Amino acid sequence: MHYTFQTNVGKVRTHNEDSGGVFSNEYGILAIVADGMGGHLAGDVASSMSVSFLEKEWANVQAVMTAKEAEKWLTEQCTRLNEYLYDHAMNHKECQGMGTTIVAALCTEEFVSLAHVGDSRVYIGNEFGFKLKTSDHSLVQELVNTGQITEEEAEHHPRKNVLLRALGTERAIKVDVQTLQVEEKQIIMLCSDGLSNKMETDEMEAILQADEPIETRAETFITKANERGGEDNISIAIVEYPNAVDADKAR
Image (cartoon, rainbow, N blue to C red):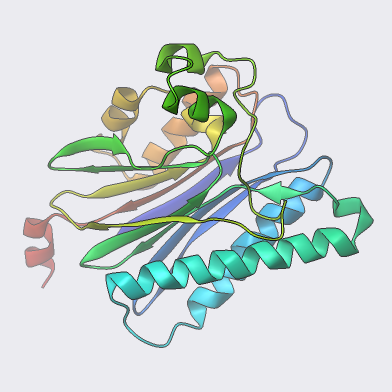
């Protein structure tokens, strides 16, 4: 698998509250994007603590996981992480009110298990198309889900950034998890809303399908988000599976 993670402060903000990374061990790859919140420095703390926590736990994995075990592992780690962040905020006055979104993709040769809390997103492309695989835990998405506003109205809603769920803001948290089978020509993209708010799905697909190094494609996403205002931090992680033909050649 090929992978990359890139983050950028954007054009407006003075510091970057996003964190992330792609971490490999002998059992697979764990990709993470976290978008922190909570005021000056606290958002940085929440997101960076989250990535460091999950990176460490992933390094400690000692066995191959089934899909069910991967979902359980992601749920347990995010639940523990939520308590860790919440306790840190309670014990450090400067961090009170901090929180972070999280999207994580645990990628093996057979399946991809996803976990998410908040409005950072996971998109997956393969031979069946390119689709958003997560549903934002936001006020605006809830209004869409209940039929109070349309998808088009949601794009420009004044409360678009109001989250209903985030890590670290409450003692208990519900983590959404799901598992997808690996398909031909599979590519996984995780991103913060600093990117997803600036691009349509078909445009994302076109960039990801470009015949360029994976790092160049990630740079293109960041460049376009900044060209369109760059009001928020921008983060992206990409994991690309080799095509079956390419994998056969590599053997």
